[in-house]
Image (cartoon, rainbow, N blue to C red; front, top):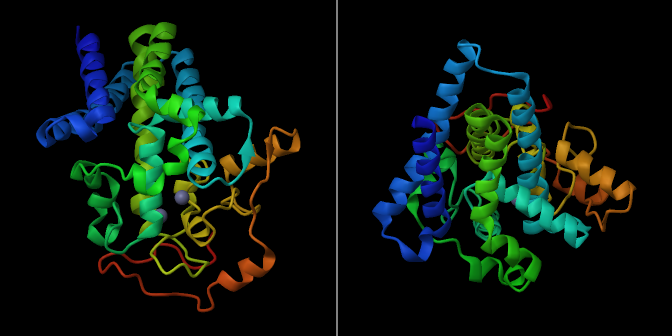
Length: 316
Ligand SMILES: [Zn+2]
Ligand SMILES: [Zn+2]
């Protein structure tokens, strides 16, 4: 009963999150978002307790790892580098698969995600940035979700809205999200749902939220970008290379955020697929552009009063 109630509540919240922008009053949206944010965290706490009770079978660990990798790369490879920044070209089938995997991971349709992310790049750490830690670290991490401003699809994503492949996944995003919960549940019941679905969503979402919060507050800044973006090795490992965020702000359309020398799982996948001909037109900055953007001085004081660099320059 508890399991069924939790699943129904989570799915209801997800449906609210997916459709809120035009149709629901703000209080309903906030309740839906609260369930979505708190639900996976409660699942994580439950999973910890369950682990303590030895209720973790090897199959659950496999579900957690496999679904984390597939859906995590769906966000970084599909939503971010392919869809939003056009860092490379690939086949239609890989596009559909990558965006569907991304929809399994995050409570956002692909075009909404791209629009909000492009808005972030356009106003990074200035007025208009939807999630800057200049407005508070908690706001940047999760609070901004509750501001309930519709994604500016028309302003930032007209090109994407004309693409039938992208629109197909955009319209069916909630189904993919549900599938990411149903499949592990079918494989190992409640435990499968807990580890392959709920815990996986909690870990992944907060890793990606950390790119918005931690990676604009703690870490190194090898490039001059005019914002607070930083490289953070821990977040890079947890978020499939997305933590090399200062590199990314310096060269937004660059495919390999690790720039060949830092661990970047998404960059490795792109290079591997390029080698076998499934990815092409991979965008890389020229050595001259890299030299031009490189920060001259070792350090710049952070704009955020209470937050200091946690890593010395070059630590990455
Ligand atoms: Zn950023
Ligand atoms: Zn980006």
